[in-house]
Length: 201
Image 1 (tube, rainbow, N blue to C red):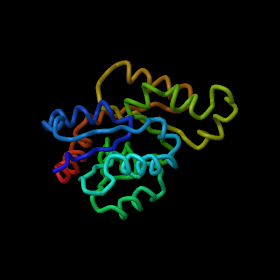
Image 2 (cartoon, one colour; image 1 turned 45 degrees about the horizontal axis):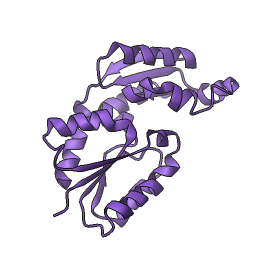
Image 3 (cartoon, rainbow, N blue to C red; image 1 turned 135 degrees about the vertical axis):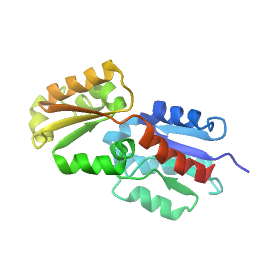
């Protein structure tokens, strides 16, 4: 029987490794990662997944966990899952939801709609993925167009590292947003992955 397969966003490397190790699953699944910068180009996610699936699971006979939520694919990821019953994905619309857990995320979103969210990975790589990724380094005049309707930056942290909080605070200042921090840890993500991975493992 083929080893179960996980195809995941590159922004989840540290967290996914930690969860798989804590559950004793690291040696029992094959994991491949897609580029983290697809966060800014969600139209590339499904074509890249199709390419990997054609390479690693051409006969659709492996159980596969897709390490994404919808993540801006506009339902095309779910359409891919509908084509292949051996696929399942993480729950929710985006990584902020499965890191925070749906109840907390809904509470935060309802409290202040104009919120820009960061995870540990996005805080640490803010320059590359947000500032440069949105070309604000070359076109600062775009700042109000991108973020004019936001009022708050919420860091949903997986660790309690001071440098991550400092990076989130700096990002908020650069974007002109009020900074808030909620330490969510790995428990909600662990639950999401564990439930999904045990269905494929």
